[in-house]
Image (cartoon, rainbow, N blue to C red; front, side, top):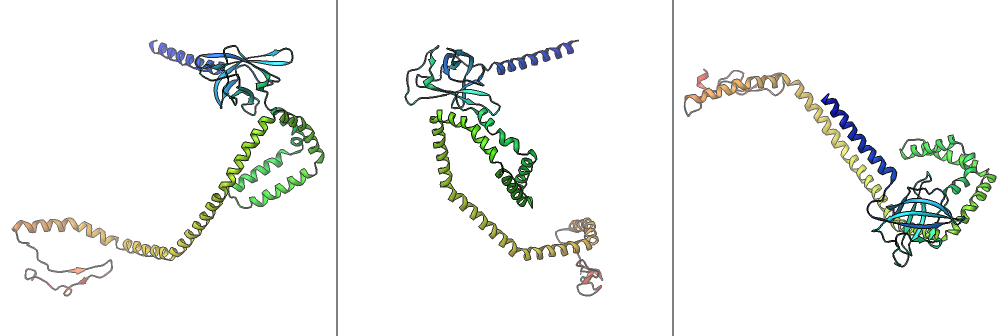
Amino acid sequence: MKTIAIKFGLFGLVSILLFVGLYNTMTNKVNGDSKTLYAAFTNVSGLRAGDDVRISGVKVGRVENVTVKDNTLAKVEFTVQDSQKVSDTTRVVMRYQNLLGQKYLALTPGAQPGTPLKDGDEIGLNRTRPGFDLTALLNGFEPLFNVLSPKDLNTLASNIVSVLQGESGSVESLLAETGELTSFLADKDQVFGEVVENLTPVVDNLAANSDQFDTALVELRKLVTELNKGSGNFFGALDNIGTNLDSTTDLVNDLRPTIEADIRSLRRLGATITRGTPVIENAFDALPQLVGAFVRSQSYGANLQVYNCKFGIKLLGENTTWVGGQNGPFSEACR
């Protein structure tokens, strides 16, 4: 019973911890002291209570409520940490958090420091932007999506992956699929006309948010300029890699005959050692006897009591070469 009670206690503790973690995640609370502010928008479609409020991508608050103001505007109530500097020059922009349509409020500082806002202050329309309508953009391309076959798109994507993996024949397949897709789209003038018509509201939206669009173009131009500056070094590095690969190939070609000769010599040595394995085994078997005889020869005094009667040499062959004759003694003690 005691073991069962302990298990139930642990289960209850883990359940409580999981519930607390889930509750904190769902409520999306703001850490520390915070103040409540309000912002007026012309459109807050997709913005909901609980969405993030961020500064430079860092969460500093949450959306508390979204209501209608004067039957024509939207009023957003949100909280932000007291430690964050929000002034009467701060701009509030609604942005997409992901492609699923979830949004958040982005607070961007103004050109001047401004006066800090107090709890309950409201930010007017002149300093809020509803952001870009991603749904309108995707709906604008709907006619084009309807005429493209998923099979063709999947085949094209598979060929691209194959080319990147270095599989043979994929480059030709990729070019063929790209040519077929281009020819197919070239005959769809009406479809492209519908796309242009559907994208007209999107362009109007961009015109209404020209400041943000200009900023995006400036940043894009800076990126392209930096890439262009580094292109010379990049392609120079590619040339150096190609030169080094050529040098490595030449070195391997020069060393190949020497390496092949060494491998053949090692094979002959291995074969010779294999044939002489019995002789090597006999030598190791006789080594204890030789050591024992040498130790016994030292037991008679300081002089070395060793007499060489016969001396022969056998080099992994069939015959033994005797020094001084077949059985000729070399010491008087051997006669």
